[in-house]
Length: 376
Ligand code: IPM
Ligand code: MN
Image (cartoon, rainbow, N blue to C red; front, side, top):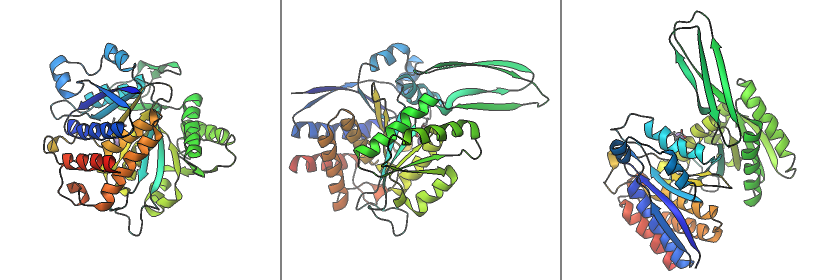
């Protein structure tokens, strides 16, 4: 029997509750399809940080790098200053593992309400491919209380190492600045992924979303690379959109979209909008993918500390992230079974959490999906 080792980081807040249900469902499908998942749990998160002062150190990262998949609940805790765990765990993982694709499907399931009037599951069904290692997320910037000053920044990535030496002069008393970087190879690999995804899923159009009319350098390069890559896929229609317009069309005409590819920051914002039109953060999964290395699968929502331990939060986002994890292991039909089971439970509408208008517990939803899998 094939065995897959998967690292699990339940994390903080509601993370452990939703991960428990995700594991339950993946265990159920592994039984049905005769494979085995060996879960190896890691304690990273607020508790671990408060105890040890560490988020994720080099040794832990090296160890996690041995896995093909990491299943992550959520991190974030009111006892830890904002940003520490987000940067120290989430972004650290994405950058260290070079998970350059952030795949966030936007899919409305039957039985789930969208806030968009007159839109149904056939209108809201697309994938957002968010670049995940560059753009304004690189953490290069500074606050300068008194110029002139010389600042140096290093940017180390799998693809390149960059050093910025800045001489800042002038008469401003205090400024903050932040640099964004798009590299040709960084853009190319994620845009290519979007086209390959379109091919695999038999989609006919890829939309590039940027703001090349204002941020002409970074997104000018992005556009140029998109145009080049698209030439290799002549049968796939392409489209360029500015991010402000894209936000508008996500709401007005979501049915236009099939695959959207976009730089990191716009991808972050647009996928929260995407989550809302598909019924909320409770049903929105995400995958941070390095196709040749380690990938991390997580719900888009955070740790929601005020709901911790209440068995109340919707585990569907995490369960669907589990389906993305299976796909990443090449277990396509098992992934489809998980999604089908979710679809069936949502369509029936008997078991659902409060965010979807029901009163079921986190655990009851996990049980219902697992049960559906076993009985179909
Ligand atoms: C997300 C989150 C993260 C991001 C934060 C918590 C660092 O909002 O996964 O979308 O901005 O990418
Ligand atoms: Mn976000």
